[in-house]
Amino acid sequence: MGITRRQALAATGSSFLGGSLAGGEARAAQAPGIADVVVVGAGVFGAWTAWSLKKRGLKVALLDAYAPGNARSSSGGESRVIRLSYGGDSIYSQMARDSLAAWADLSARQALPLLHRTGVLWFSPAGDDYMTRSLTWLKANGVAHQAGDTAWLRRRYPQITFREGESGFLEEDSGALIAGRGVQTVLAEAGLTAQRVQAGPPVRLSDGAVQVGGATARSVVYACGPWLPKIFPDLLKGRIVATRQEVYHFGPAAGDGRFSPHALPVWADFNAGDIVYGLPGLEGQGFKIAFDRHGVEVDPDNQDRRVSNDGVAEARAYLAQRFPALADAPYVHGRVCQYENTSNGDFLIDRLPGFDRVWLVGGGSGHGFKHGPAVGARVAQHVLDAALPIEPRFSLASKQAVQRRTVY
Image (cartoon, rainbow, N blue to C red; front, side):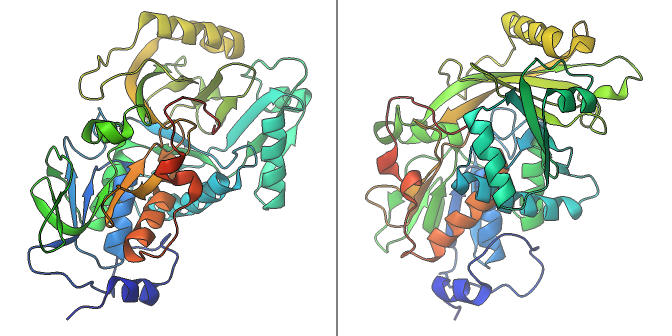
């Protein structure tokens, strides 16, 4: 007879971050043929949730309509930013810090790194409130960083054109994550293979178990990003909205190392209007640039994945202003993905109404990828401990249908 989930939690401690899956995990009790947990969605939230549950010795079934890190998911593609600055918003800064440590541990166990510690450079008009609050949090929490005025920025990064009156700071240990391969690596380390199933809503069985996508379990976690409102339209339509997002990669001249990760960090231009961000050339993909604003609403299954000519032209115009050496650089490739946004950018981590052991996890796009380890740990804690309170900001009740983004 196995131990209970609560005993498993007590035996392994309350923190799920860090460590590998090797040896000594406690096994939770389950009836033959019934999983402890079905996780629907093999993106970054689903993968790290499954990893955290497996680390606790639970039997996990993983479902995905396509494949882990697939090109239609919000977790696919080449790279994502991992940064700690959130304008002093401690809940996300601390989750990002915990997740950075977990990604670093996972990356260190791989032959090819998943985490590139390029640093993250922020710049804005001097005195910007968001930047000031971010810098205050970094100082208060002992995070390694450097900061300076316009002269400092120009001296450190001559390949960028800075405007008079701008200031900035560098998070020294942050950087970039490899996205699709990162998700696949998490699942490979957990020993999990996703079943190709298009799951629907849960069905409650007479013995209290739940069935979804042909799998039966005591608990279910729906972590399927932009597909959440497609599975639960009456509940989530308007509360989670999938929007079209484009990213662009340009090729520096042969032999030009100014835009390599050794010379250029991940960067974010936090001026009035759109936030523009980019990454140095990682793993031969070229210089990446994107505009962090919400596009038109789309269907993640069927949207056209070709980048627009207007988008490429806008990116070129920005490069001409900020990265003049790349103004005429060849367009190498682009990607169309989607955000899946809640009304204000806060995550959704809450129970499905009417089900005590069915969880909805999502709303992370635009800033969620980095948080995979912390989200997975939090969800695993909820699965193991029914008495753990829901974070009010992550509750279903807090999600509105009017888009007013406050989390950046």
